[in-house]
Amino acid sequence: METDFNAKRRDVLRLFGLGGAITFLPASFARAATTVTAPEDRAVYISASAGNNDDFYVSAFNAQGKILYEQPLPGRGHDVGLRPNHVDVAAVERRPGLYALIMNRHTGEVRATLKSPEDRRFYGHSVYSNDGRYLYITENDFDNARGVISVWDAQNGYKRVAEFDSYGMGPHELHLLPDGEGMAIANGGLKTHPAFDGRTPLNIETMEPNLTVISRKTGEKLYQTRLKDDWHKLSIRHIDVTRDGTIATGFQYHGGLNDEVPLVGLWKPGGPDLHALEAPDNVQYRMRQYCGSVRFDVSGSVFAISCPRGGVVTFWDAQNGKFLTNIAAPDGCGIAATDRKGEFVGTSGLGSGWRMDALNRKRTELPDDSLKSLKWDNHLQRISA
Image (cartoon, rainbow, N blue to C red; front, side):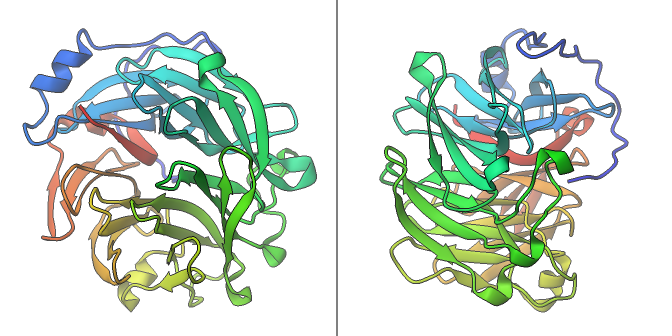
């Protein structure tokens, strides 16, 4: 999302260097989270966000859209990983990232700062092991054009203890499979290097995107699927995994706007190769060859994919791969599943927030105006009460 915004400035304390954050906190997060939110949803939603003057945050809001805290960041964040049964969350800088901050999910307080090695760059996403012991972060080994998954010991001061090959270039989002041992990685296939700003693709004509599953303990490659050669410019960027191990993925196409290519896929490791899906023609075109976030609902029967460049969020039947419906969402990207079947909360870079029941085609806007004071970044996480 690279849109300009006109939301009013927040008068928020700024960050004075890595590890020296000054935190603006509510008087009582616990009280706010339980008395202000709607009765049907007492969860907290957390996302990277930004103001209007290159001021960046991790921010949390309740189910009505009321902002609960804003923690300044040293640069633009991307996604937030949640440590199971613990207060820690990991906020990873947007690629090519130099930092990740470990924060208290209830207050935003910075608990630790992780720095990428000089010959690596963080690539925006992380995930914890189910027992909360280890944190895994996607990285770029740029001198060797190789994707890496770094391993950090959360019980030992977040010491970097290992790294695994991602078996592809440009790894981005990663998730654990239901068994907690397999780790699915979206290898986008893009070669980048800090000498060329760290984001400019250097190999579009020779891209080889793939979805790979490795062992989170040994790094062994367990499964892998690739796109057919005609679709090699479809960068596999974002994924989500449901309870039966099915992976939904969204692509970002590095070709012509009018080329006929799929933007959504489903894959179950150990089964047939990735199955490409398409929306109706008018929706497919509105997706503008770019998917931003992927999220299954709580039941695993529906998934949502946002397309911020096209200003649309699409909803799909996970059982048969059929397109269900879509909503207009200008610069809308962040998506989180609620605790209701078929329901999602979403955010946009224009400051809007909404709740969508995809099965009943019912959308409502989050009512609190404080949400509109920030531009919300690409990904959204839900923290249950």
